[in-house]
Image 1: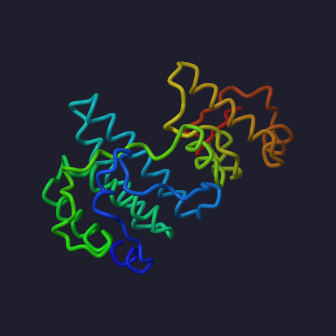
Image 2: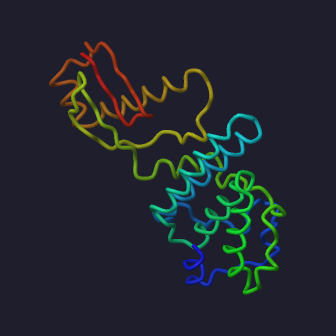
Image 3: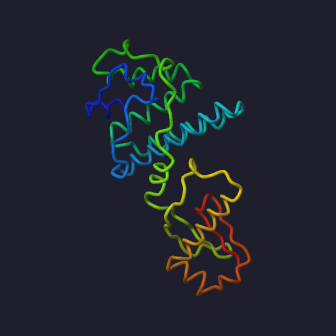
Length: 232
């Protein structure tokens, strides 16, 4: 990350690190123009900030969840490095601040390594301590999270009586960070996924022509819609 930011001549002022907004720099102006790697990084960072913050504030026994979330974000950024210096910095700086309550020494050292070269060429001694900087705030509004979640669609594997018959890509409906908590939400989302499947040529062939959809006994939607099993 340090080398990538240096290659872009990305710089900040030390005072920017204490910005009350929770972030030293903002997102690129147009989310629609983000590359796939940037969009994935923004969404993953946004979700991690929301999840970790909620765990720390509301769940005193949520340490395992926090560690799991931070590990997932680290793996996501490692496997698909953002191409935008703004997105790269936002993701890494957020990750380190979220890590600071769990591993303060490691987070503090990495914070200085990250920010020393980018703070307008100032030496690392001028970098504000990570514990003097504000906690990261969610990067996206609910509607923005939905827009990024919908990019690229969702791949669904469809089984009939336990046997894989076809795989399709459907639009995404809602992001996990913005889904309502009403009791009917899960059922509504599953119905929406099933309806999108039935609209496809593959869905029409396998579920209406090869089988009688009206005589289905059960439809099982698992893994957030990644797998659908129709039992006749």
